[in-house]
Image 1 (cartoon, rainbow, N blue to C red):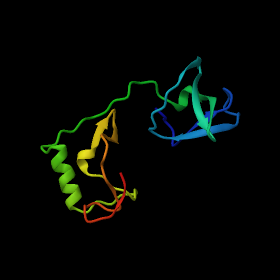
Image 2: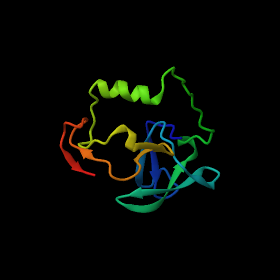
Image 3: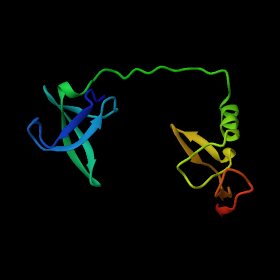
Length: 129
């Protein structure tokens, strides 16, 4: 995990080297041991994969802990409540909630034949399927 507000990835294992990329504090990052003071990571910079280096003081190798909160409501009920509240989205297309399935933490459209609409109801025009 990145420990600093701006956790730098260096081009070579030196804090005086050019910075390839930076991560925000708390970002989860994957890296491997390079030396006693440095970790190596593969990062994407301008669409290209590069090797980069984190200083040991900039990252944590501790196991990431998380908390889980249980709510006395089903996911379907929560979704119904959000839809009734006229949800705002950055997307410009909508599918019926039954078209969605959570796979490994990502929502995906499953099956075929679902109408993609310009708004969140059947009153909106179909823009594709």
